[in-house]
Image 1 (tube, rainbow, N blue to C red):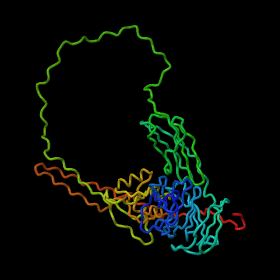
Image 2: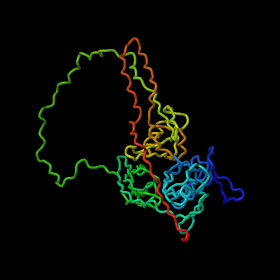
Image 3: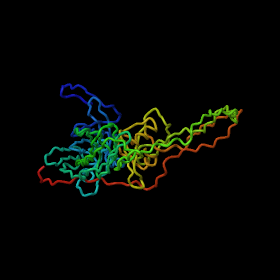
Image 4: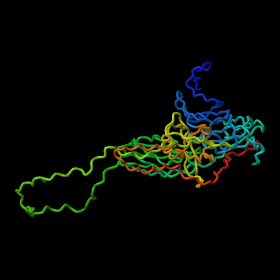
Length: 469
């Protein structure tokens, strides 16, 4: 609930409320430094951390749900989180004290951890296991001017920690610009290392730059709102440590090119000789009469029965769980192209064989049709995940509470029934049409190389207790 405590502290009026979800316990909340986004910790361990856009308090909007990096194998839960700068620091019970880069709230990344519960002596060896219990890192204080943070663990006591930079700020992108025939502008730039998102700023007619796009994870942007105007652009690469700003690029309005290049030679003088007379005098004979023989009738009369269309298939698309855990079995369900209730959309990019396979759930979309699901992923520069990609766990822990939801995949079910062929008219037999070519059964099978695992960056260092806080 969002209430106005400035109006009344004893009975603050309600501004708005988010939809209730069974099993969700909104334990604690914290605002981003620009007060645009609210991070809510769920102590019941259903979704872990929820992100809301609260730019309009009357209509808070859920934009992301995320969990810590080991959620798929070790089911811990958050307790209290605190935003400071572009980072979110969370006392995560048995998972310890965690740091997240929130410079892109739509795609949050874990960047550091202190194992207060599993490795309280910081030896590098875990002596306890995560079992989803209410024990471990309980709370923290992040307001010390030294930058140190105080973390209380229910078993190991008080920790004094300081966050190291997980990486440097991004370099400036190298941007190119192109006008199309409709005078729209396409910007493209290189992938910048450690960038969590990109933002595009524009200036028209020498006016101050304004932001026209933010939190982009692709390396291109199309602007169709500057037709007939000259525009200047710059692109920012962003992460928790700062911003890399590109040089300004200009995009002038297209002009028509001349048919022939200009010449340096002067125009020749006109000829003094007159144009010669026509070679043949005009004829006085009338135009000949039309042929007395008309064109014959068509050789064959039209067919009285319309041509029979080739048989079609009622295509259905395979459904799959967003994340298989332990000994769970994949669902055996197919969706028709349009369904009544929305289903989860999991978007993938990269390839498992190239070790760059990645899954995102942009905007937490529940799509009611296969076309809506595929179009949404393509609009983000990605594609709809296959059943096999979901089965290897590439989408586990990616938020939106979709791990437990059945969603669309890119695969077509192989048990699709065939529509019977219509019976042709007996008066005009038609040749039997060739059998239909069955649609592809999905994307090519991917190699069985196991999905790579990555260790979380240890983005903290211990501080001697004799140092000033």
